[in-house]
Image 1 (cartoon, rainbow, N blue to C red):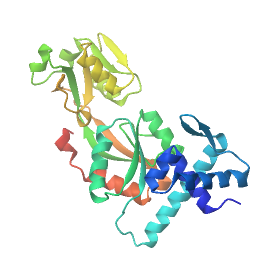
Image 2 (spheres, rainbow, N blue to C red):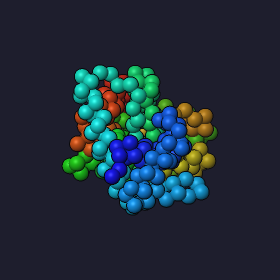
Image 3 (cartoon, rainbow, N blue to C red):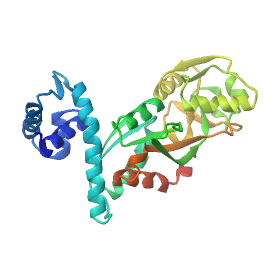
Image 4 (spheres, rainbow, N blue to C red):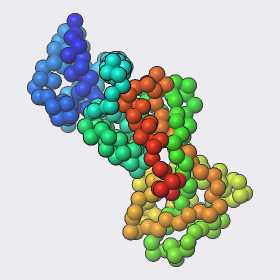
Length: 294
């Protein structure tokens, strides 16, 4: 029968994505983790990892066990927090997935000031993948501008963000204090693919004014929009909360884009009382997002 120590070793390796990374994050030797996982595989007669030259991947059996250990050790963490009387968190590991990087980075920065021993993994993907990762127990917290419809997920709004036009710094429009939607769409546009919340809100604003695109170049990621705009392929649209300084670009308010994005922090409803999840949500709610153009 597998021991709790072996199950924990398996969980740490699966969570970190490798033996060496797990050993570094948890300050244990790689040989110890390897021996404990081998013991688990030997007693169960099941191989949990596919070991390859460039790392490891979970087998089908390993995926199923990982879904169980995620719930098991999350419950253990919640129990410890309850029994400690809810004292301040110190350390812990948080798996975060978001549909953009600047917002979660700011929240993690704030949270790390009160919990400097915190470790985390941050994955940037699209809103659909955010929800899937949460439902599959591959992430603890999600950040997205898309409100999930699945009743198993709980979403907490924490900020609103306006749209901003993104133009090359050398473009004649870069000297303007602002643009209107009608002015912007007269130019070739570089925008995200269908399914992007930034695009959806832009389209909602256009519909409200009975406008539509003239010429559009679609790309799959927001960082690709930035690079295409910087290279002169057209005008892009970004969210004020996610704009970062770039000497190649100018960001102009869109004066008549009244419809804004709402940003949500999302978790499984069953995990809303997890202390790490709660601490992250409180950190998100405590930030003055208006200072970032919300």
